[in-house]
Length: 342
Image (cartoon, rainbow, N blue to C red; front, side, top):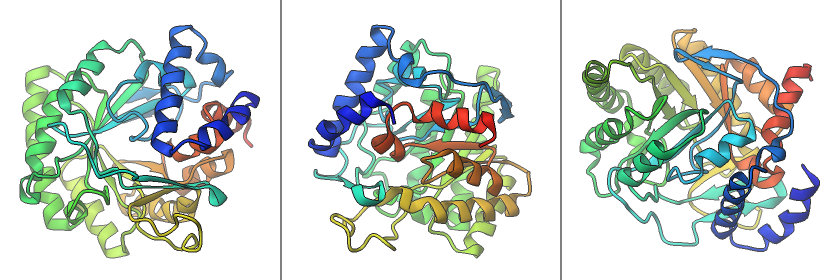
């Protein structure tokens, strides 16, 4: 953790988490405008990875959620990530769940959120995608509106895919947010197959229209049994997906029930998710057997955590919650450790 962030963190933690997030991101944008944001990262080694038909400068990415609306792409691009994922975006604007809806678990460096796909909508995000200058590899996380019936979920994913197709490097079908009613039911084999079949067919049409094939990922929960993992692995391969992201936040509260805010509803991320997500990554890597890429996330806050996920079978990595506790220098710190073999 940099001395600057160590000094600022008590002030940020005196604010509610959503306000602190806005303050932090506005400050990062200001530093970017002044040409100073890159200094937060320091030296960033190249650790190239070829995956999804793309050349990643390094395997460490930013998970969706930090920049839901694409407002900070250029500034985040200064922090050394090999790729970033924005969103989740919904076709129409929606406010998400009532506040308060984000809670820090300080003792264990965890976060619980029940944001509920708060989104400024597809048009806002696409305008930001068109305006970005950063060349960082960019993914867009696609969601559904709360009032779209679950049996029509594919319509929302397709609408979002059409909007971002010309401006993204990959897109993610998010069927695992715990904060949108019934969304996780789409992880069942039949429901998932129907969604992916519809999205894959639309991707084929868009490929012909745009002259490029956009890689697609599917983001799943860590709260899956072995049978569900096998069934999901079978369906994502059969429907031609390019990657699987394991994993989203967990609804489990094992080990944090006694903490302040430990029993808030929503999805938990951060360090308490580390072991569970690593095990899910390992199981998916075994089930997929190299047929598509596994992107691993959940509780990465150190070089050791990153290497653990890679050893479990992930090709690419994502983090987010650890930035709250460790600051914007963390990505480059992890990459320097990976380059040094630590």
